[in-house]
Length: 240
Image 1 (tube, helix red, strand yellow):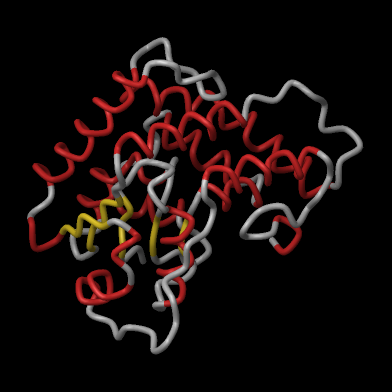
Image 2 (cartoon, one colour; image 1 turned 120 degrees about the horizontal axis):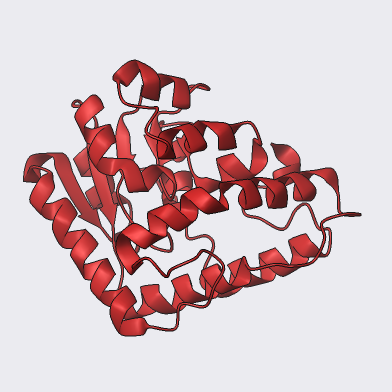
């Protein structure tokens, strides 16, 4: 059952949050990496995008595998639906400096635009690129909700003003929609204390909050993946 709902945009510390939530016992946490490492999950999200997932029972099937938390697209786009069908779950809205977010998001989106053939790459890498390609129409639809009808995943996000405005609008929408006692607006730089207090769990003793997947590391990981390195990602494809 989902206990923690991530409502933040990609590139707001979602990979760090995945690691943190799993360390706190909310494991496994659903993240885009799950789609990349489980090709059959793409069909789940295509069904979601097609409006075929509505009831709690429907969503429970999406989380087959025992997922207790969510982060990152595609899951975080559906924060409103998840908050409704899992009324006992808490919502964490990850945020960061909007300009820094824009630079990171622009790098990520541009880096995923690949035209090279995956043939000859290790099977885990090939599966990841195939999953991303199949999911791309759904990601386009998600992104267009925020950034306008011309937005396509993989194309350069040149309009900083539009993107930053969408970021602010999203944060305001979540704040206005979720009761304050159920919502934590959280910057991963704040560390364990506010997150643990909100979730009602102990702070890990003498253990730093995970900080994974900065924009440049992500760009390098994608380049390494295209070169066939199956250990390129923070959550290794080869291990999934």
